[in-house]
Image 1 (spheres, one colour):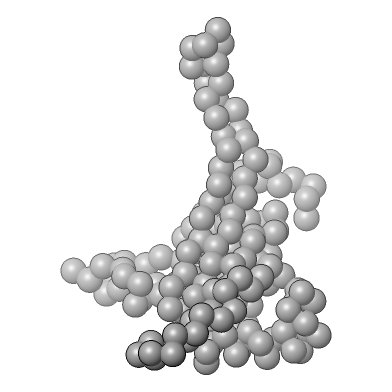
Image 2: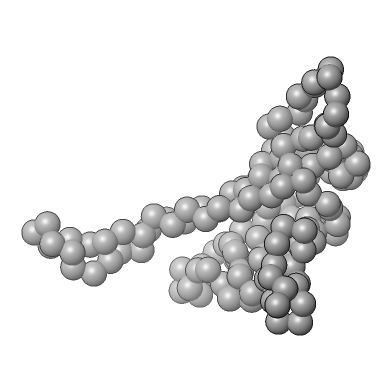
Length: 150
């Protein structure tokens, strides 16, 4: 039975289809255990954030450069929704959606004169929309948490 691996993922940033060298997306959920007199007594919801990083080769980084040129600059690019989709065989599927992603460029050059490896560019991003993250169509946040934010 086929399992999902990194080679199975297609990545779309807005309407740009990219091949990534690597990609991360991390959720920080600061929910915590509530305590009464130092004893666990339920929980409290905390703030959330999500951020990730794309590592791209020159060909795919230039797709982002073209989008930034159209916007006027990298910082003028509007936040976009990202879809990370993978399918392996007939039974394994994963779809992660991140909403309102805003890009930054962190590692623009790393030149090795010995060669032997493609140039790579690191592009971190933050999730900025109250729609936040969906995993296989299931929202991470409860509807009540985002009420009035859209």
